[in-house]
Length: 275
Image (tube, rainbow, N blue to C red; front, side, top):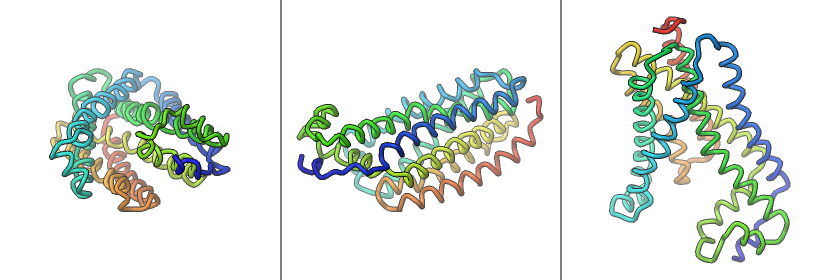
């Protein structure tokens, strides 16, 4: 436990984490309010809910179930994937692309058959990306804030006890504590930017898939899967310490712009009143 005693909470860690939580929550709420306010007559909140539920089922239930078998559980497949960076990255981006985009397609094609307006496609994308922020990213940020606050008090033993960190779990918990301690305004900016890029990407991917549903074109779902995989490539490499964090942000910005450009072109092709 001596490693924890040497951890020093940076002076900016707590305020930076608080601002990150506020900004991430605000971006989702603001996107919903602005889009819904501008297109109230052509949007239905069912699409926002459908996007949120679609993400939770496809990414947090089905995809995580496969991850448990292929990543978490101890078996020959998991040992190979975890022991090989190329396999880990390829597995991660394929699973994310296939599960999320196929889930998006199934919901838009077979469940959401009414009110098929292009404005609702955007609202669906906001629901998909927004719930990822609220249900996946924010809880992690809140936990980091709790860690930072506890360790900032100077009583390491009390902090470890509150967080239920024992000798057995110390090794796995140490990286999280160090990350919370090192969090600063630079990390705040990069994390917030990354979430904004992800939210915009989900909107763009939804428009692409939605256009494929309306037009009957068979190439739009594979295109969305490919774009999703490309977007996730550098984040997966970062998890393996293969690339620096700043390169992940540059990569994310690039593919968000590419996806957005394609989505805007398809959005304009759709009639304002839906098909």
